[in-house]
Length: 435
Image (cartoon, rainbow, N blue to C red):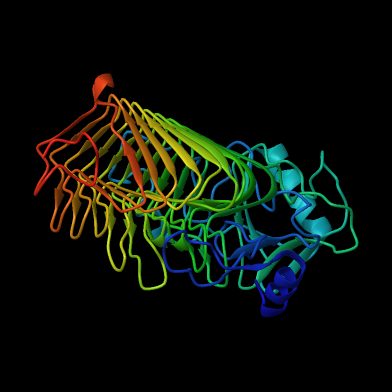
């Protein structure tokens, strides 16, 4: 995106926010730059603000320039062989598309008719879309495997005077969005602004955003099924960052790095559900002025985590808060496992909101300070039903659960809750907890 385009997009669509961090330092300001989306070297923008539609989408097998074949992620694989390394071959040389919106529309239409194509877009070019031509979109729906290779400073945008419409239909099926970079803002891979983004059987991997949402930044509704987010990086939300409601099922979020929310960062009054999913090997670096949350960080209105494994995530730095860092809001974790995570204050969980654990295991987590399994803050309300907190370690105190003055912890041992075999002790300031 050119400097002029970036300035225009921010003036039209962005607000500067300073995130509220209950009970902790306030984070540095972040620009919510919107409209930037995947494809190597290609910026897709809208000009009329969040009320428009998602800036990016794809239908049935659109690929990035890093891979020429139709992508089908192997969610059982953890070594990334299904897409790692193919980008080293470089871009596939394709059909040049002159710097004209009509030329781009014609090229996509012809590619659909011929069963797919690689299209090389012009460098230093803005493809300015002026009309809704296909069911609410400015470009034809992509129905065959098509690669869009963006050149240097290539932009696709909606004209400011045009009616509101999306760039492309916002569904990713059996697709790969990999090795894209947003140097000036959010959404390293995909931006969804004010619409519904659906990701099925796809890979979102090795994308980078200088701000939020390494893989995906969503202001709207996000639905993910049977997909893999792998090794994306950002300042917040390495895997994805969301301001709207979301649902994640049968998926993996692994190997991400961010200051806050290595895997997931949640803004605002979001309602979400994560089920039958692995969140593993993510890192929150938590430098001064940020917080942590290697797997999940944020203050959702209500987040439900069901049948999820959160394991081997690491939060470093100061203060380095938990694999799960609930900054506020409400969260239910049921039938899940939180194990072998490491942090500074709270190895498995750092809670400042209202957190309920139901039929869940908190096992083998470590903290270099307090709260090996769970650190419950002064504003935290923690309730456990039929939950096991065992074999967690803290260097200072509260190997199982550390409860700060003012916080509340209800173990409900009659339901089967067990807190045992934690070091150096099971609990601090928790009524009914054995020594």
